Length: 377
Image (cartoon, rainbow, N blue to C red; front, side, top):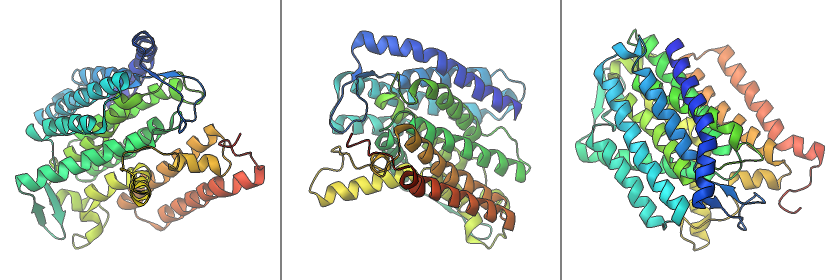
């Protein structure tokens, strides 16, 4: 755990320092977010936060290779992590080009598919799903590739969609990364396996990069992550779940779920947990697609009706809206991990109490305080 904490701190520190350089680079190249009708910032803000986070992730990876415990892990841990990092670099560069030249949606999608194809080419993809009992459902190569592409593209675009308020996407992904780190770490511990797990390594670094970026990005932001950052975060988080698919057998996963081998829930944990951690951005993505399709728009055409916009509409301030969405992401992510690994009456009570507090803060506080609608001011 101490080495993972060091990985987290290295990623956070390097990202925090590189953000200053990234901001200057963005200003010199005119990679700046201009104020548009659907935006909530009032002045132009520079992009390229993704470059700073990529630097933090890279530094954390090379430091991890030198640490006594992690350096002695099986070769596939750093091999898979390196593949994910290179794919992250590819998708980050696509985002940089978009931040500079505003690429069309089809070109960006092509870049996302290219980065995902790199993951698949080097074996970072879904391999099997555990089934009840001692059975596992293996995917043939085409099925595995299609499901991997769908998962990565959905996650990348979900994070991109939710990146609409200062600090929002970095906080949601950071919370998700930490929650998934705990899941990867504990599932290995409960099965008496090596604690050096690719998913845990990637999530420790990803959580640190988000933590290092937030001080520069929280309201009022001095720097935006841009598509270079949102697509990078989405790929890293989805790829962390993909690596878990190949590192534990079906029997090992089911034994860590706190239930019998015949129970369906424990066998589905590697699928349920990653999806639940990202339920907030996924919900925003799905609602946006439905909303725009019903209006006869293309699904990628922007509007001002995302979840974070609705939080502002009901009376939350910018900063409080972000914190409450973080709280929802924490509830769903950590709640799922706790219930899946440590199902007990106390766990359910704590999660229920957390839910009540979150609902009150979301819907009651604005009415009590009577805050003016920021979108109308």
